[in-house]
Length: 111
Length: 120
Image (cartoon, rainbow over all chains, first blue to last red):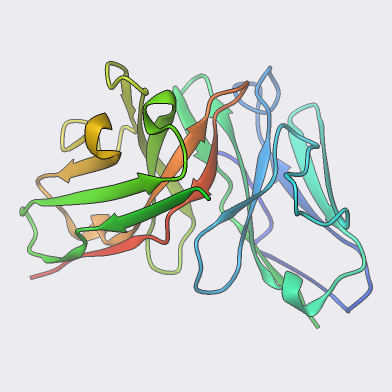
């Protein structure tokens, strides 16, 4: 049971837009802590995709965007491409656990 | 470029020990916190531990506290994870990652991971 809740799977056709939610609580996302997002392509290590709620590291296409509001965050991917098929994880910090915490991950399938 | 390479994984019996290593290059190692994260087969990511640049501050997840010890050797640009009293549920790919401590800690980049299998 992950502290941050993500849908297990989402899907979309090439060119479409999908969103992935990340639900937290008042001890993590709902306070001062930022949310980060990682992309894990099949058989590879996770890679930072979005940091501090809305920021893209250099090299990440602007098709990827994210936001945070209240106790939740979301990742949006527009203009879906086959190479976007991957697992996506949100991450924050939980003050009750004094620990970095991850969402359970969401598998994106590009139909 | 920044590179992290883990080693030391393998098959170990329940109750046994294993020491993982992570060789870092391409950045000023001693300036950064470093961390370990694992991923059980087919499962999500679990943060385990991080250590400050000087090594004097360490934090652990409850699931490994008292069994795992994180350490580093800045002269060798290396990070370690000593794992004792291993259990079947510790079977996972173990990743080391550089920790960016600006605002909420984040992990960037990650190594390629090393597989630890705990089985009799």
